[in-house]
Image 1 (tube, one colour):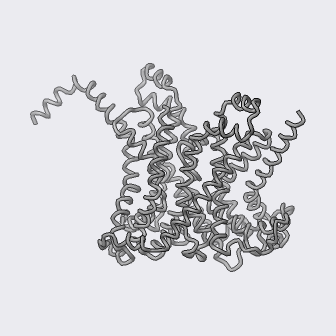
Image 2 (spheres, each protein chain N blue to C red):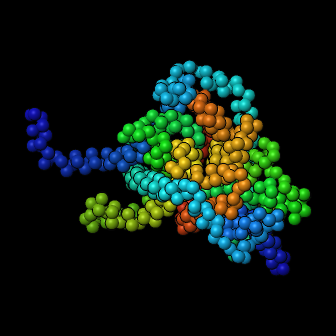
Image 3 (cartoon, helix red, strand yellow):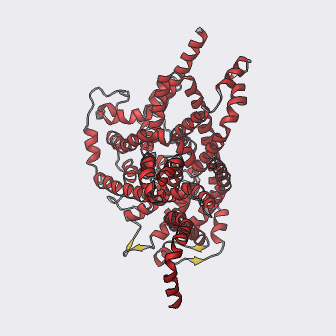
Length: 317
Length: 282
């Protein structure tokens, strides 16, 4: 009581100074608090839950009872002794390497092309890139279904007309390999705009005089690219590559929908689809959590690299 | 000189080929949506529908649950975007205008969080949302569950891109306003807010597109027909009948892509830089 009265009596003199200081100290924390709280609740807590679930038997009965049974490392050992897991991991790595490689190489070539074409062609290409970029993945899947359908898909028609081969009623989804190849074309097509436009922006940083000087000196196009252009766009390419790896390794929507739920089998699983089918579809959430953790762990190293890069880019302020 | 011209022509030819390959799927979607069923089912494709029909569009709109699911999407997406942008803006102000302990940790968290593949969290989110009744209603099957997930999904890149836009505002402007006798808040509202408005619009539009296109969580959390979002609706369209109605499917696809494409064209230029920094893909 006495202390409170004292504080009140002292307030008029001290307040301006103290108030301003505390405000300066707490304002930024008040500002970030809502974001931190939301992310903690919707990302942080599920992450914690994920680790708990991974050590529990958690199926449909446990979901209804709201209570899992601790089983130690049983889920992990079950997954790691599952040959489907290892095959899926290998398949996903191969798929990722192919998709990312194609995306980065074709995207860079497209950006280099954008520099060389006339203005009106550049506008045409840019518009098409933006259109593709904007296409919702689920919509793109349906367009792919339509273009590649067995009866009268336009892809078969065009390939046959161009005398590339007889593709009359060719089934593009016959084998797991061709299914995943189609998924790859869809992914690469959808990812090219982001890469091409970003690299194109980076190319504007390359000094013109250097390229011209190199060309006058008789350097070949490839040498000019390797020695002059590449060092300038390399940081951007590194960021794009690590992002693409993260995205493609975790791809779900296109793989799941283009192959089609009915045609999903262990032979065409990619990691995310494996997780979905084995965990969610078969209602073994504990095992699913273990798969999730193994998946997160395999991209974690790459993420660390990416975050460090981004920090360096972000620290320019 | 002649060599230069031929070379330019060569590049342009390659450029046009690239344009044709990239744009073709989009063109084919729109073109199919306007064709007659005979043209669609023919073995020889019709490239341009000379007598366009709107029948497929009306057919698509009158499919079961189309209207309900469009409405759901129009509730989920704007609500999620508004909440996310307000929260993200506050945090972005903190990052751009204040130095404080833990700032770096916060930035690392914002970038790092985006690296978590969404699919990795479906299991705990499903289990969790099936458990957390809000006002006695389980969040699984409720739009609110998806809204909450979308808010947290778009928060990190919104914070990061808005911070970039805020940093672009010259400090002198803000200081000048404060010298004129305004408080920090006054300076903020009168000077900062109008300047950052384009950034707010661009970031909101991008958050809109991300949520509009989202499929995984909507598919996981909304399982009753007529209570889903439009991407989930579209994913069920194909394969639900014996013979696919390609015209209606392409018309529906066109309708779903249109808002995204328009928005994207509006902000693409502004967001292109922020994208690299914010690490977003549609």
